[in-house]
Image (cartoon, rainbow over all chains, first blue to last red; front, side, top):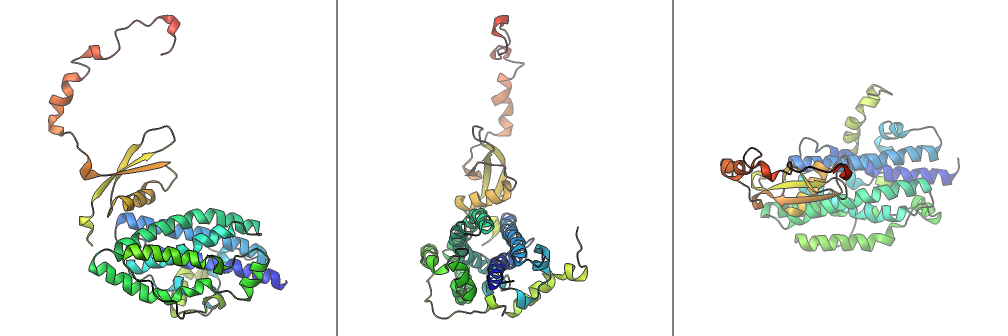
Length: 253
Length: 97
């Protein structure tokens, strides 16, 4: 197996891991949403992300060529083999934290998937073309909440500011590149996130202006997710998410 | 922010182009824009709609059920049968109407 194949599968796994881990965190709201309507909304978003992850894992498994399917990739890898962004694995937090994380993430995945729908990998292009419609809705829904909580009561504004302090240092990781992404960009499979970083900034700036939130300076950022170096939270999440397949391998219902 | 302060919205869906919007239920939301997204997530999860209307329930003027007799009984079929087009002989040549 060549380096090219390895890089291709690794790139797809990053996209899939972002979606699965974020989807799982959102699914933790199921039955705990602030209202019945929002409970359903967060569940819908979680299912969208997990659906995207399934398609990406299946494709990554084929490119990898070792016979691993979506379930093996999702349920039988350990934390250090996951390559998701650190931002999406953090605990679900309060509602302000949840909608701000979804806002940052969707403001990134929407332009990402728009560009990936023209990828030279036709399977990835197809998955991205479907995902961009979902990401557009996630962005709209999350942005509406950021505005209403930021420009809401003293309590909701304070919680948004706390969530912002916590999440902001994790946003830079979305735009990192390394040897894997550079190789994929060169082949037209991936897109350079630098090409839509200004779009991301503009989205955040516009929504923050309405939300009466100050946009922080870009200084340093946490990093390591793409090479499997994670926070303490991912292992706990996987222990719960993977329990059934670990305890009863191959079980289905 | 307490849920009991959120206003109620009535949700109407248009199932297919050409058909009228139909009332499907209600939900609580902070404002009309959020009511639209909540309606999308609550009532269109299985591809039911091509369009959504939401209307604040408080903005709907409704007839009083207590006025039923004065409003509707005078014009029901037993009282004014001539308002129903059942007294015409339709020529055979017309076929189905």
